[in-house]
Length: 68
Image (cartoon, rainbow, N blue to C red):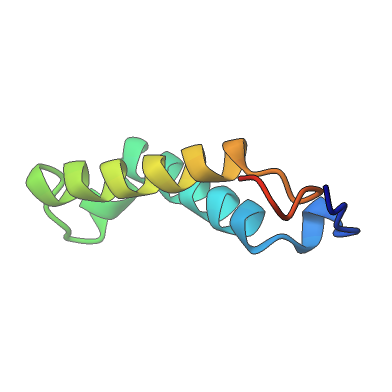
């Protein structure tokens, strides 16, 4: 098993999940609706994509290059 010496803070997946979570919070607080974006269908699609990114970030293990 290869051990990768990578800081979690330099992981692209970690930053994608942080950004996704911030965008979800903005959506849930109505910020996108105030900007004129449709909070209905588009909001649901955005939420689904962002939650997928959060899930990938949570499950990521940057210390092991062979496994997710």
